[in-house]
Image 1 (tube, one colour):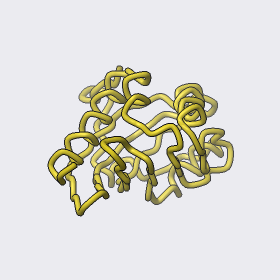
Image 2: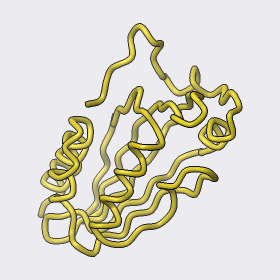
Image 3: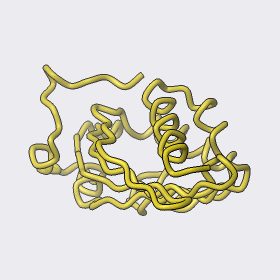
Image 4: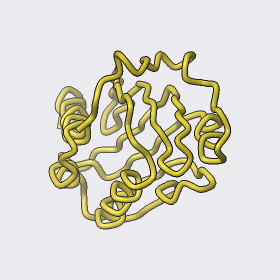
Length: 154
């Protein structure tokens, strides 16, 4: 695939995620995908997972643990088989009711037109605080929206 096609694949992944179509999202992945999210104490979805079934479990655990408030990919950079997406998000931790937000980088590795690797780079200080039931205090610095203007993710 060329670089524009690789960016298009990543954009399709985000589109499926934001529409809540996890089965479509999983269809964009290789069976042996390596999925890596920074460890966050109390977040059952964090850590490394291997294989599309484990990634399906990730999305199930994520949905049980957090409610999305905002998710916005902003920019894409591609070189060869790697795509970096830059963006920001905000979430509410279901167990504590605390909200947190952060800027992020997602590194996708593409093989034969499918995602075979995903790695999230994020400062997870605010998510750790939110999982511990402490006010995260990072919402305003991430560009997160107020309750009145927050977009929904289905």
